[in-house]
Image (cartoon, rainbow, N blue to C red; front, top):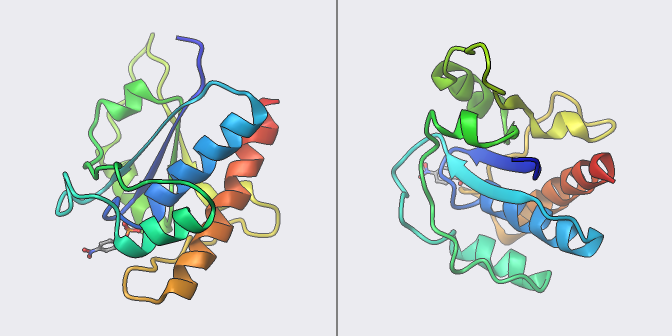
Length: 157
Ligand code: 4NP
């Protein structure tokens, strides 16, 4: 499978990673690139739920409907199924490293990293969890994930 594939992972998969998924989908369409894109949460509490209404509203502000997205928990198979897995914050990255399967010869394991490491000047920083915040915090989330999405696309073109 040669198509690039990207998985975004946050805690609940209802706020940050769905917005990252939406931002990259929009940038991929704009660039005319076929990329397999998904998102997941390290936790499973929201599995099957749509994104947080504030995330849906933020995406809508950018002309994107994410109301049909459904949360799911990350699984070990994701490390085989995606070329790149990006953690939205450092705790998500630690949790992913804990569940990452041992690398087996002959497999092409996912490259795992912190999303904001992609963005110049933002290395080592988190996409801050907006769950307990305001609509403004969701706008900040959008700014962060769309900046990272543009870098992902620029590396593929
Ligand atoms: P997310 O935000 O990880 O960006 O989807 C959160 C959503 C739910 C919870 C925490 C963070 N929660 O504790 O339920």
